Image (cartoon, rainbow over all chains, first blue to last red; front, side, top):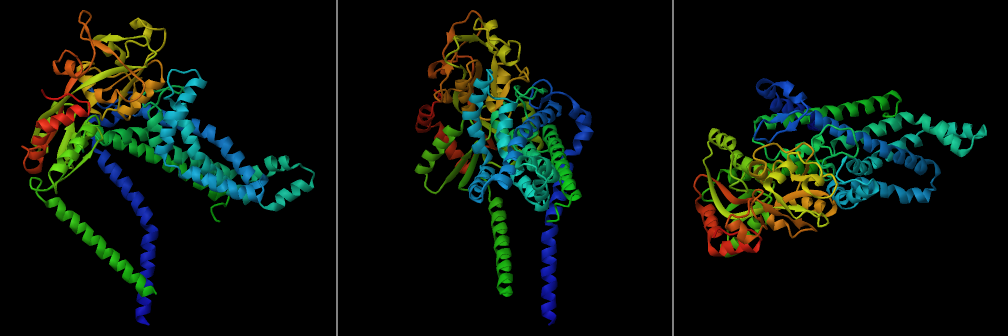
Length: 293
Length: 288
């Protein structure tokens, strides 16, 4: 009997530690990031980070201004979301409201496959197919720009937006629809004026989560955005994102150098951004009681 | 049922701890006597190093050499941080890196095993055939923005470079840009092959890469003049070797301390006529 109780207790502790493991890991990662980055405040000074030039390898003067990297990430992310949102939401509406069950059975696995394509593969596809296409369509000199990166990122965000929006739309009580139809509204009117507004919180959350995924994406953007660290909000200009910078440069730095610490600051900014996006989407979901399910 | 789960967990723990213990033991082995060594560094040299390593391993049974790329900067950082045995580098170490090595107690030894020419490439549809070193410099520092300024068509220039972890990037910056900075608008590509790919696609772009890569993709190699009055030189084996071509560089192997054991025999092999034959076959320039 006693043994039984001990066992139950042990199992409880085991499960508890599994449950809190992710919290501990997140905290440790934050701690580690700060531990590596903190000495930067002392020697080159924290103001170095707010300059407008990122040029970590130079015979003249090394510059660690992360502003171009932040604007680069923002431009690519916003463009990707602008492209992905209409496709994601309209797709979700179609799958949950209009498609026949057979179509749904057919479409859903494909969306999941799209979500599962490795980003290197997408990047290669971008380099060989999307980039020349964008160059020709917009009569540009080079297809390596923010827009090409955003198109690829949109492909990655669409599955996230679509599947979460679909859940939200499905959870709208059917009495709403029935009431709307009974009052004489057409199917389209019911969808756009009743169902979608009712599911709006879930849709907003899905967009936020999609943004979180896009901000953190690395490989595909690194291959097609040209990676020039310039501050520009022109979609046809080449940009360098925070993720691509970390991925491209982390391997070369000597541990503890200024460049190394600057990359950790980039990592902190990036983590705070995704953290903020996740927090917002969590709040939105919670406010409307969707996360309870 | 639950008992067996427990046993499984226990078994897993035991296995993991054995694995960790095993790894730790392996790390402690003296670098001079071990039979498995790693080479890390220059992407330019990956093809050369893996061909050399393959031939060497065929000859010397029981010795293992693994080769990875990542860029010369990556390799140098790895030898300073002690995570590789040999670093392959397409540039010599900078003073700053040598100082860091001293600080970490790493005694670096550099050995030249081959030479390489850097080709400046454009799209075949670009009418430009030759450039002076000064003109190339001004393209990559952003002084020239249009092909018109170089006697070409009225089209903006798209300049492509490698990422800053590349030895090719640092060599180009030091010897062609005379240590000036690349213009921020220069696009940084993650690999030599993506430079070849992009130059082949974009009519008005210009890039640089190792001679070995010029066979990839649809690109035109420019002839380079040392200055206004010098003859234009095509990069090839002979012009790199007799140093008439301006953008040529040595390729290094960097060791931590004088090479001994497998490291020494591998270095010997690379310098031998047999090794140098592989250098030539892979598109690089031999020592003699």
